[in-house]
Image (cartoon, rainbow, N blue to C red; front, side, top):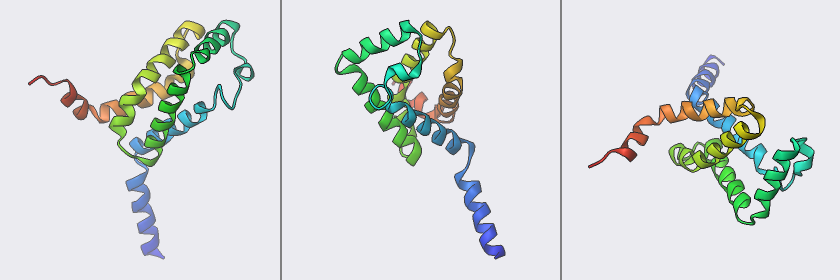
Length: 138
């Protein structure tokens, strides 16, 4: 019994690091957002009229929002299964930028997504060595 408890504690310590918790949070957040516009109508979100009109117009560009939703889905799965987090961050940055811009324009703040933004900044800091290698000039 004591051996099992030690193994469980060791597993928890190895697998539930802060980095992993942030990855799972971001994955769940993105998965919950993938259905917005398809499974969850925009009218159900109770957005301000300007926001709803703008996002509806984005959906009318037939390629744009399905591509965004595909990127969200891919990044979410990568975060959840802990596969190539660096690549997940790279493909998620444009979507995050869009979320921040829409939040600033329509809501006057990014508070609704501050935890998500903090998580992305935290993971970027953890993977900063990989990002440095992208911007080094030879």
